[in-house]
Length: 326
Image 1 (tube, one colour):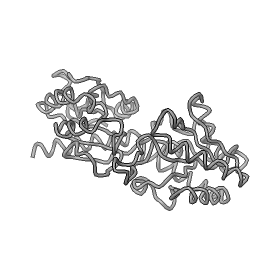
Image 2 (image 1 turned 90 degrees about the horizontal axis):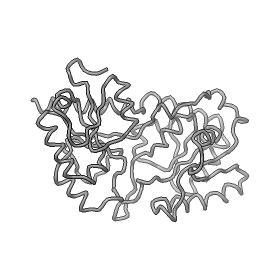
Image 3 (image 1 turned 120 degrees about the vertical axis):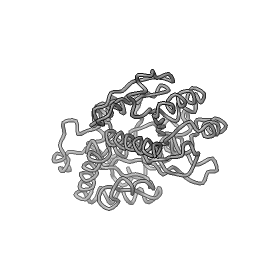
Image 4 (image 1 turned 45 degrees about the vertical axis):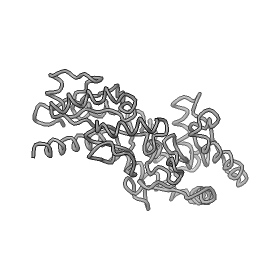
């Protein structure tokens, strides 16, 4: 619920069009307003925080700075969420350094806490999450999924694998191209396909009717510019697949331990050969697989919704105002 004072408005600046966060703040009882870089005095007087994306801020640093100055005078924190970290390979280094040097943000809320650009004096972990309007059981039940006969595929992946067009997906394309014949040789039912051209319902059906849904890389998972380290953060599918009742087997993620119980709610593999071994294990231990899937579903729907992320951002904004007033 919104606070008892008049700060019951959340501003969206710099064309931050995150519809899932619009829904989340409104579901918590807040009003939202899209303000670009020019909020009105009346909006500033009621604002709990101003929300934007780092991507938009880096693209328009001077507009971001203009917005920041208006917010500062009104005592409203500018919070930048970041789903493109940690290396921001789509932006020039000089753009990133300028944005960091301008100190535009009051709070930086990335999906990974890897040490990288210092965009704000305060950093809060803001993992990906599920938009419950689109990610739920869609009329199915977990009980239905306890029947092995319910499943059409043993292993699946639906996502962007156009490595020729999108360089960030070239490694993913290579991985699945090598994995398919190895799994088919074991007699497993395999579906690896691009999501383009599939309806939302078709994708839901694949997730729910696959014993194992795989995760391998995402567009923000480039190694660092030195080529040393991959992203620690969890892609959205690591929450979306469990939300729909599916079992997720993911490449290793350091932040998995922050969001899931690694023994009961999470399954991962180290490398290509370990992926094959883990697939064989979970296909061969169906009851264990479904127990993990059901535990992960409960955890995601309880702790990893956008409403929960919005609550965390609102709490960070309150702490910021308290520290400023001290």
